[in-house]
Every structure is written in structure tokens, then in C-alpha cells.
Length: 134
Image 1 (cartoon, helix red, strand yellow):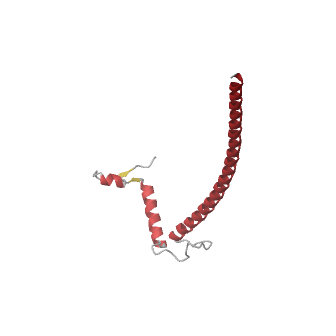
Image 2 (spheres, one colour):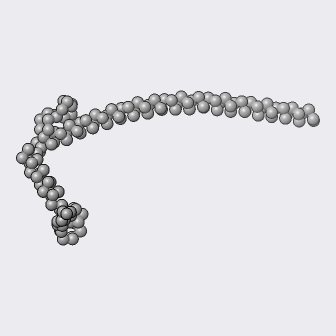
């Protein structure tokens, strides 16, 4: 009976060792797979970030060109999405001069104009003229 019990314990130890070895092997394989996955994700993320940066620079250049075109300035550099013809609603130089003069007057007078939100609240419109500092 002692031999039977000893054989049973030996078999359990062998099973435990085999199970432990199997778990160790699987953990090693999983670790390798995770390393490969992490490297491929890092490469994909780097590629994506490069594409985003390039597209961002392209959009920024196009936006600057459209702003120049809207302001009536010539478009520099022949961008594919921006035409060289002026926008139909681009201000003329006379319009630009009137806007600049009005802005200078408003700044010089120091007007405090109500915001759009104040109009909707029903409060009366009040213009305040500040006295220049002496």
C-alpha cells in the first residue's frame, strides 16, 4: 500500500512539473507574440503620425492661401485645391480701406459695443465712450 501511495505521489509530481513546464512555454510564446504585436503597432502608429503631420502642413498651407485669396492678395505657389482666380465675394481695395478706416475710428474712440448675447437678453443697447487717459 505504501508503494501504491508513493507511485501516486510521484505521478502527481510529474504531472505538476509537466503542467508547470507547459505554462512556462506558453508564457514565453505569448511574450514573444506581444513583442511582435507591439513593434508592428509602433510602426503603424509612426506611419500614421507622419501622414497626419504631412496632411496638417498641407491643409495649413491651403488655408493660408485661401485666406490670402479672400483678402484679395495673389495666391502663391499654385496649390492644387486653390484656384488663382479671386473669390466672388472677395473685398475690393475700396472695401478694405473703408473697413480699415472704420476700425481705426472705433479703436480711437474706444467704443465698448454690446455683444450679440446682450441683444437677445432684451437689455437696451448702451454705447460707452471712454475718455482718453491724460
